[in-house]
Image 1 (cartoon, rainbow, N blue to C red):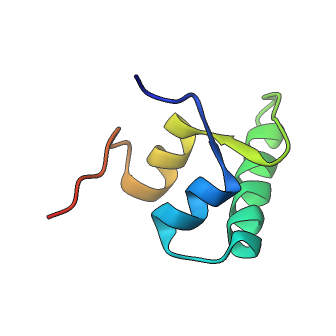
Image 2: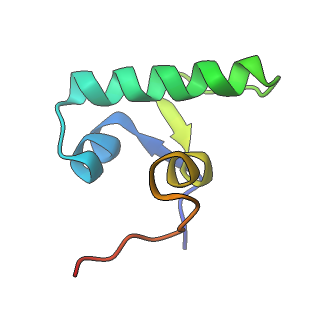
Length: 64
């Protein structure tokens, strides 16, 4: 089952960055969503939007 939202620790793990940087990424993505009229949740980002912005819409990233 796919999660609808990613938290900062999950984003940090996926991107290999600190939790602080992950919060910055989430904050910026949520600002983009708010600008387009979407309601956001602080500290979380929709998984589908995250995947679209970082991986071009791929739903799952697998290790090679």
